[in-house]
Length: 318
Length: 304
Image (cartoon, rainbow over all chains, first blue to last red; front, side):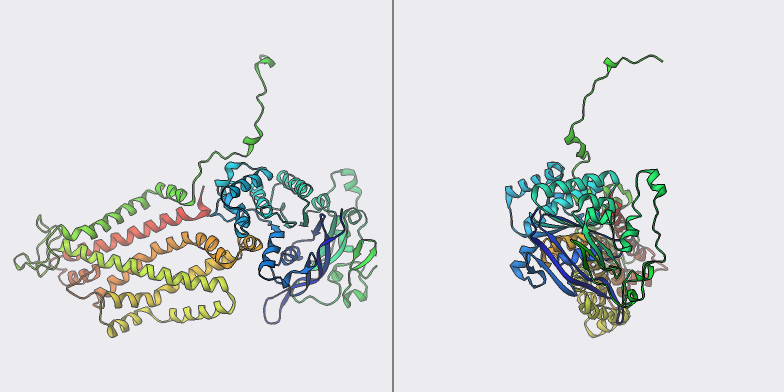
């Protein structure tokens, strides 16, 4: 694997202004990089800013502060043709296979949307390309003239994947592509994504809350809590030796298909609720629920530091 | 139980490619909507009734005597073979007058709605799509217009301008488009946050493409339904204004004006009121029932 960085995110902040005094800090000071050809998993519970982070990286939301570099170029400074070129190189697969397809367009037109926008193919070539993409994701030629409502959830998700692949991107943000699907279909879609990566050399930012699925697909995993990236490590290391107290608690929640192990294992139960991301208090976001919390945790924001090689943690314990 | 011989069975296998086939015939959105509208007997009957009314408004006046022709020898006659719907106090044929009046009533209904749809869609579309302060200003204007009782506007305009079709349309449209604008704005605001619009943005499409390829096709069904409910309200408003004398002036006539004259002789010649009133009722009812049917047929959530 090459070690060249495809995406670099530096101190990314995305705030939403709710009212005059209230600011929702959806993503606060997040930094990470994604190497060419790898999959970076991003996990965390609902509302922790994973999706906002993914969409901001693609420029769908305007970042409040910080830099997003794609191949060394800041995407917020791209204009005109350069911006169009970026949309051809970076794509997204959405969570909800029902909301992400326009019900009034045929599947062929949905898949060809990127082709039409970038004028990649026309006429017969366009039709050929649609058929090629349909077979790539395991659907039939005949499906091109159908409408989305005639398909099942898994089929629709594959249509969404074909749409993203139509412009031949290098980087795809997979925004919880499997969480709306049945377990039997999840494996089908994940394996399709892995095969596509192998054959086309794609780079993924894989957002999910299913920890075992993320372990299966990711090379490295980042854990988010309330807009902060709390831990970032290669997936093997993170799952074997989690350092951040939140990661430890999160990982202890994965069900193990072995009753003996499951019975003896100690489940770390977190006290209290996730605090509101609106006007957060200073200090570590996890401090109110952390059993190791020290006085410093409630005063100073911890920064992400490299504790071991390629293992980053944002915690005052290390 | 008799034991089954294995040789009676054979594995026929399964064709992999057949796993994803769809048996349902391939239908476009409009074909599917028409299929579902056809199943609704009441809506189809209303559609048939409306087409019949249109045809009568077009050809009806040529069947009997001219609508302005006064024959003093046949004043206030009841329905007969010579005058199907009878005659009025000036001996004019009511059958011809009814369809001439229908032309005015229906054209006010259609033209008024058309103006409303055009202004409402553009105004609401801009307001919803751009949002923010543009939306704030545009919606405050709508609210101010809405707070003026439309009856007052209509009466003032009818007094200032010469009463007639143009002043009537102007008065009805000046405040009438706000409902459509609000509806379109709501739809656009809801749609522009949807994931397929985000997907189109991620693919690099510009505002033009998003508006014409995604927003308009997805709101057109709701606009059509809203339109079918709006046409009868225009017809009703026209009838009401003509009835109180602010609308169509003689010798021209409309259903409302006919009702107004009929009402003066109601005690002695009830047929003079009955036929125009019936025409208004049937038209309103048919449009409303058709609108209901269209709403069921065009709503993508109700498709089976």
